[in-house]
Length: 333
Length: 223
Ligand SMILES: Nc1ncnc2c1ncn2[C@@H]1O[C@H](COP(=O)(O)OP(=O)(O)O)[C@@H](O)[C@H]1O
Ligand SMILES: [Mg+2]
Image (cartoon, rainbow over all chains, first blue to last red; front, side, top):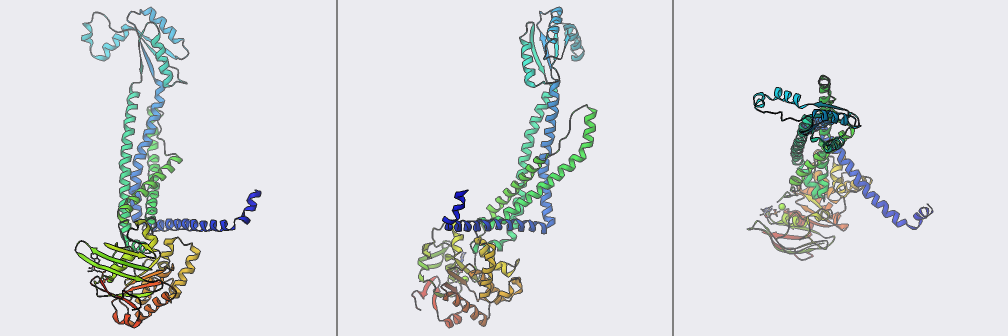
């Protein structure tokens, strides 16, 4: 504090050059603000053209985000169903029914087991005969090839995939147990499906992102053409590339922001429209499925992403078309 | 201030617009550049503005050799050169004030200095009262003066003009020329390309004459 107070006296020159630096930085920022405002106003004054671009961008952005939301909801479903996993424990062939019943009690008394059902080999065969349609073929067998089976259900609470794995391993190690199968059935299929869908969504997002960049790039190219004179004069009086690019880059960012907002609105509307039927459907199937909306930070990320894409599109156009505009032939030649 | 050393400029492979041009222009000097249409006047000015690069020889401006100036540096060189064209290249989507302010904006001059400097430049060309108008509402002579105000607003040490009086009547042309004289009196180096022989004659200044790309008169000072 004391040394701070002494500073201004000893460093007047420094303070002055610092204020100059502040001046330059200030006018630089002021220029950014001015350009940002002017390019926003330009869009505002051509509402139809701007709206078209925003809508195209909005749709292109909303699609992958909608699929991502759906994907997130599906993953929620599979997380819920993971708890319904059952462990099928096949006993060894030489285990008698009596021994199987003892094993059932032993397994049933474990803390990490909720319930055990014993399916003896005769009823297993009967069920197989009924469900497989191989009844005739089975008649040729002179003895039942199926073992006794224990269906083990892990408890509802605190059940994780890892815990189920541990339990399965311990069951397999018991004497009299031949093989253990963790049956995730359709759940696994759903998981694979969501993974596949996940990849597809990212591919789609990439393609649509590219499309957005191209759309913005083309729009900015037209803007560059229509402001050719201005660009030439600015370059003639010593405008740097950064200076002449700036309005177009801001335009791209504003296009992006508008597109992001449109996407947000589209997502909100679709969700609102779908939420009723989905809830009814979920109730019918006793499912915990809910279609989750875009959380606030997700929406902000969407807007930021849209702005980045808009900027990128503008950058592509600017690199290709603006840098090529050089003060040409002055009159009188 | 400007020095050409054996400067040759070819367009394409066959057409030579300037052939081994040598001359030297002092600080604060006012000179004319004359010659028939197609003699290479505009080309010579474009070399100074870095709108074209010489095919051979050196162009030196303010002690800097421009030949291998990287593209990145070009804007900073141009900020030291004011240019006026026959078609004045004003922007009709903004006011006279904003047209003149453009070079300052490009340089990042703080807003509070811009107003003062733009008005000083407009005052010098006698258009202070028209700052809020659109250039389209002005006469040809007035538009040309806006162009001059824009060229001098950042006080460049060098002023180039390409046919600045091209489509003005003799009285207005003389006015414009006197404006250029005033700038040279305060130390600005001025080079004016024009094929208006009678006007140039009346001014009695050094005259560089181009004939089919060759400098045939005015190479030496004092004539
Ligand atoms: N960009 C260009 N490409 C090809 N030839 C050009 C170009 N600019 C000028 N020229 C040619 O160079 C010669 C000199 O042109 P210029 O310098 O404009 O003459 P002036 O200004 O004296 O009328 C002319 O023959 C013109 O056709
Ligand atoms: Mg010419």
